[in-house]
Image (cartoon, rainbow, N blue to C red; front, side):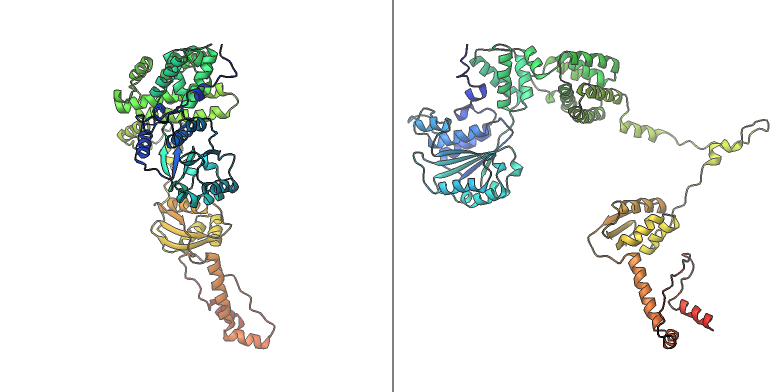
Length: 560
C-alpha cells in the first residue's frame, strides 16, 4: 500500500523535467531550444494559455536550462541535467536567484518595487537572476507602470518570465517588451496516449474508453486530466474502468446518448422520452447530457461539411454509424438544433430542476425537427400564384345571410402615402395631422434638426428627451410616406427646436409691435400700458399665414 504521507498526485509526480517531456507544444519548444543554443535570449518571456497546459512548468524549465551547471560535455546543450544543485533547488522552489511570485496575491506596487530594487544586484550563484511572475494579469495598473522601465532595459544578468491565463488583461506596453508564446490546448488523441503511458508507469490497468472520456472532460488541460485520472484510479482501486469514469463524471451510457440524439433529430419524441428517462436513471447529469448532445451536433455538422475528412481517426464506431444515418438532416436544421441546445444549457445551469429543464430542451429539439427550414418556406411562397379576390355575389332573396359578410366587401381601402416633407416644420406637422399629439409635442420640445435628406433625418436631442423618440419618428414617417425613413442622432448643434423657434419669432413680433406708431401713441397716453402677446391662431397648411402686422391692423380697425 502506498504511504499516504509520501504520495504525490500524478500532476506533480509526472511534471515534465526536460523540454522533451512537454506534450503538444512542439513549436514553442523548438523556438526556445534554438534561442538558448544561439544565445538570442530576450529580456522577458510571456507565456499564455488555458489552465494546465504547462505555463509554470515551462518557466521553470527555462530557468533550469539557463542556470544548469551539471551538463556533461557531450550532453544536450539545452536540456537541464536535473542532477546539479541548481536544477534541484529550482525544481524545489528554493533557489536564491530564481524567485517565483504569485501575482494574484501580491498585486501592489510595493511588491514590484522589491523586484526592481533586487534586479540591480547580480546573482549569488547562478548565471542569470530570474523572476517568474505567475498570473501576471492580476497586477495593478500602478504595479505594471512601475515595472515598465526595468522590463525594457534590465541588467544583462536578469530575466523575467510571466505566465497568465488572461492575456487580454495585460497592458500592451508590457506585451511589447516580451517574447510571447501561446501554449495550445492539448488534443484528445495526445492526451489519451499520455494518460495511457502514465497509467502503465503506475502499473494500473486502464481501459481505452475510460481514458477517452477523461481526455474529453479535460478539455485540453493536462493537469485537469491527470486529476481526473487520479480520481478514477482511487475509485477503481488502482484500475481505470469505463463504468467508474462514467459514474464519476455523471456521463450517460454512450449508446443511449447516441440513440437519444437520433430520436430528437428525427422528431420521435415518445421514444426520446423513454431514452431520456433511462439515461437519467443511470446517473447521468442532465447538464452533461445536453453538452454531449451539443458535441454530437457539432460532429455531425463537421461531417456534413467536410465528409469523412472531418471525422477523427479515433472516432468510435457507434458515432461514425450515427453520422451516416443522419446524413439526411439539413444544415439549417443542425444550426437550429445547435442554437436550441446552447440556450438550453444556460437554462439548465440556472434552474433548480435541471432534469426538467433538460427534458423541455429535448421537447423543443424534437418539435423543431418537424418544422421546415426558412429557406424552404420562402421558396414555397414564391411558387404560389396570387389568388384573386372572389367577386361579390348578390345573395338570393330567399337567403337570410347579409351581403356585408363577404370579405371583399368589408376590406378597408389602403391609406394613400403622403408626399415627402420638404422642411422640418412640414415633417413635424405630419404628426399633428395624424393626431399624434404626444409625439408632436415631444418633437417641438426636444428635437434640434441638423440635416434633412430624402428619407433621412439627422437630429440632436435635448436632455430629458424620451429614449425611443427617434425610433418612433422613423416608424411613423415610414408608414405615412410609403418609403423607408432613417432618423439618426448626431453630436452637432443643429437648428433650434420648433418651440424655441416659435418663441424667437414671437419675441421679434413683440419688439416690432412696440415700434409701431399706434403703440407709441398708446404709451404716450397710457404710460403704464404693456403690450400683451397674443397667441397666433392655428391655420390650415394650405391657408396663407398672417404677416407680422396683421394683428396690429386688426387693432387699428377696432380702434377706428
